[in-house]
Amino acid sequence: MNCECDDFYMNKIKPIIEIKISDFNYKLFSNILATMQNLHRWKKIDTENCIYCNHESMNSRHLLFECPILENTWLIVSNVINCQIDWKTIVMGLNDMPAANSCISIICYIIYKKYLIDKDSNSDVRTPTQFYVKKELTYKLQLYREIEIFNQTNLIMRELIDGLS
Image (cartoon, rainbow, N blue to C red):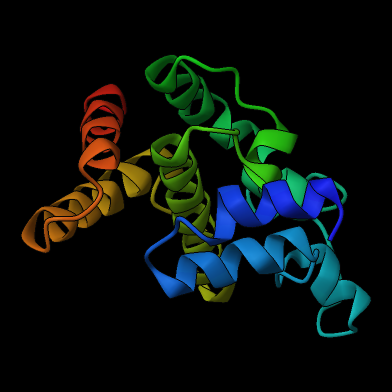
């Protein structure tokens, strides 16, 4: 394995307790998420435009990081973990910051899950992403408390929930 793959594995796969989030991280790293761009490339849909802002190509980077609907969410995350979030951070993680990596992965997974719901919805009315992220983080925090895991992650998640208010 090369160094970049080692960093990815140590930051985004190995420390993640939930298998579905590790799987999500692997698909993100491999560029095989079912984004509008990939679905269009795979000839499943007619357009690759963003379903939120109508940007010409909704790839993973746009969906999880660059879409204007996420600007405030990532600003809050950056402030809480005291680290500037960029695309490389989302994909590769931060060295020696497992709790922050877990939270970033959880948030990305929540954003992707919301996109899948919205993509398949016939309605133009969509729950604001920040509200949905807060709701799902609150649920995950309660779950993690019940099974007594992720102590440092729980603290970061609590701060994120407060910041997303």
